[in-house]
Length: 482
Image (cartoon, rainbow, N blue to C red):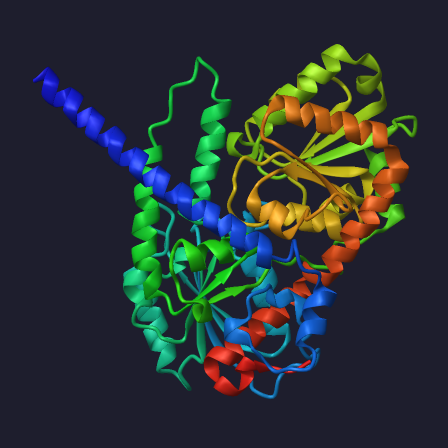
């Protein structure tokens, strides 16, 4: 019996080893090729100089569509678009997927398209309203797990597809519409805000940071098998939108989806809200009593939970404050967001201000009040909106060195800093930021805003999605000529 148990354990270990080894080989190939072709290695101007004299087939365009310039005026063809999203954002309580859905589809509604949003509604909350008669919500009760009830929303979708004219295109935010239904919709595009392959990197980071008192994670084998599962069912979606350069490369090379079905459209945020405004920062500092004598103001925002890296930066700040009294006396840290680590930050001292969750207008003031934005995330998937908001606000950014961030946002030292997910690396980078000072940070902030305006505005994102949806609807829109 003992021999059977040992043999079974060894077999599982050997299987896990083989899976991880295979993924590592694919990852090496992926990273090599991605470095050759990502926006990190090619500037927008270089790409467009190469393509200026030729017509581009958008379906096989290997870069982010955000680098292209699409017409500012609405197109002559008004689309009927069906949208599946498991949850519509409610005030400040919204994750990246929900914020993406809100920003993108409000922009498309403003451009005159007819949108039907299939989403959930909680009976205990009021649903927001918008001044667009062409933006229609079809609400349903969520399942016990908080997801869309697939049978209900499918019937809602079918009814609307038979009303008036059928949908020109269907968009699902991640698995809002499951692959079992999506396989029957040829004119469908799915936006991925995180895939299992990227999550393996996050699992490795968190295991390395695990303290001896914490239980060892048992998710690695399951996560590797989740990648295999995704490789199989992702094929059932007609078109795939990657929200970072790295994710696009993984979908093509690891998930083996044909390149003409994978399109990179980077996340965007509202450039009218997130912009440099000195007076907003001054008012925000005055409101919270931040002294002018402070030589540096660090900003942290988002969900204050473990996988967003808050144990990491909490420990780094704690150690720095203990070993360097001057740093502690000259630096203020503003923490915006909600979660269990909020209370723990307060224990670090009076120069840590925990602000709670902020509405967009207050977030805009928050970014204008800080000298640099810090994102210590341990999640390797997706492209974090907070980084993009800070960049458009003219602030340099500092973040964990993961592929989605270094491949699309912080592509060099001109606009910010990156660090390995360890306390020592984070401390070293915080000291460098402190020593560089406000003049250097100001210059990096200008470069960050410039990149943000080129790639990360809501206008650029919405224009790219609109063109993709037009292309899916009519082939004539799949050719691009500058």
